[in-house]
Structures are given as C-alpha cells and as structure tokens.
Image 1 (cartoon, rainbow, N blue to C red):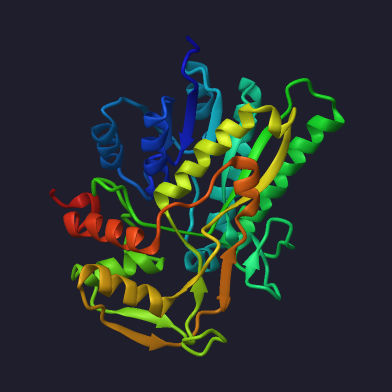
Image 2: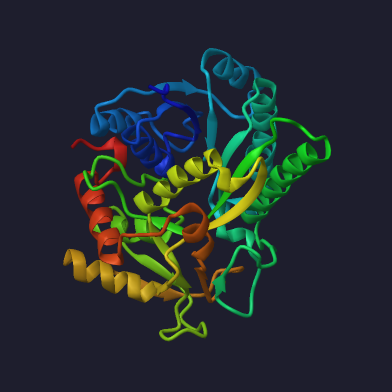
Length: 353
C-alpha cells in the first residue's frame, strides 16, 4: 500500500484553507498546517478535526520566517504545498501596500526558497481573478492579458511571475526534478461547510459581499452598502462569479492529482480559473439570500468604489478539460450554507455553538 502523501497547507486555519483541510483529510492525505493566525483562529482546525474524525499537525508560523519553515520541512516529509497564506482585502491593500507586498510577495519568496532547499517542488498556489485587467468581454479566460488594478491583485500577479520564472529556470538549467506549479485563479468564494461548523469569519467589517449580507441578516451589522447602481448591467449593480468554497477547494484536490499525472508533463507552471462561468449582480445576491433564508436585508445604494469592474466572471473550460473539475453547487446551496454557518455562529468562532 502506497504511503499517504503529506501536504503542507499554508494559511490552513483561514476560510478557504480550513475547508481545504477537510477535503484533503477526507481524500486520504496527511496534512500539516502552517498559519500565523493573523486573520484566523485555531478553533477552525479543531472543527476540521471534528468534521473529519482525523488529526492534523499545526505549526503557528509565519511564511516570512525561514527558520520556522525549515523546521517544518525538516520534521515532516512534505510532498506538496498548497499556498493559501496571504492578506486578501483589496481596500486595505490600497491603504497599506507595503504590508501586502511584504506579506504576500516576500512571504512567497521565503516559502519557495525553503521548499527548494527541502527538495519539495510541487506547489498549488492560491491566486485570484484580480490579476486580470479590464477586458472588452466580461468572461475571463486564462490567456487574457494581466493587469491588476490594486496592490492586492498586483501582489498575486507578482507571485505568479515569480513562480513562472522559477519554472522557466529549471527548464534552462535542465533540472532533473523541475517545479510543477498550478496557479488557481479564484473568482468569489462564498458558502460554508454543510455542517455549519466552519465558515468565513472575517476580522472586523467584512470586505466581501456575502459575509456582509449574512452579518446584516444575523443582526451583527445594521446595513449593507451597495457600491453603485449605475453600471452598464441589467440592474445597474456589479456582476461577479460566485463559487461555493467546497467546490473551490475540490479544485485543489484535482490540481494535486494533475501535478501527479503524466498529463501535466515533466514540469511547468500553469494557470486555471476556478469559477462557475456565470455571474450574479449584487441585487440578485441580496434577493437570493432573502428568498432562501426568509431574512430581509437592509441595504442602501452608495457611490461606486474606485477600481471596481462592472462585470467579471470566469471561463472555466481549461479547469474542466485539464483538471477534470467543474463547480457543482448552485447559488441556493451557497446561500443556504452561508446562513447555516452564520446563524449557528453569529459571532464567528468567538460564539458558542
């Protein structure tokens, strides 16, 4: 019997990372989690183990700490790294760009240096649709020009460049064990695990639409601000591609399997969109939430935010063709699971079940 592969999950205590831990454990992988807990709590990992009935190993470590990473690789026979660790608030990135470049870009440099030193050169990277620039068509494919319009997106684009360069250097140097890297460009992850035990628990005021809606519904916030109703869309509000977080993390399992396969080739670095392929407007999201939950959402229309696109959704064909992955859950599933989590955990991981 083949030994289980051991996966290092950076940022594994966070929203997407914790859901990935569940799917990895249920798929039979052993996992090691590294997280500095700057925007997450260890309670999420306790609940991951509760859901799966399986154990994981946790290190409170920052990816910018080379000594801590070296210790993790020394103590664990890591096969592959899934790299979620990073700051992710667009607005904050505009006011604190240095923090984002230092944490996201420098942190990834340190991580890949530690990986290379340990001989671990298989990586699934948590990228973002924010690496794309404005386009004449709202449906974005992986070969579209990149042109991030905020420091968060630019930090992700810089990391993609770094990873492509690492892969290209192995080709130039004819390295017999080259990097194998999947860049997964997320659209808008929402939802929660069906158990209601883990979900999105942002620090402070949420930066994303769905947790903001759910916190208004549960009474934690008074009102939702809808940024702009004069976009060239059917109802004037911005349209985005929303994907259930469980579908999203299953894409990471497929990416690991593809890195293992002959289909990926001897090495390389390739990008994949993870989205549903269709968009919903802000008002459609509010209406869907009200319909599924029976909760009225108090909202007001305010001015546009700088840098927001009118419409953006994924072309997910490459992920289907090459990873064998596609989103399975619909908008009602996303809303129902979000509300199941939020209603059971009105204060996030700080509340009692």
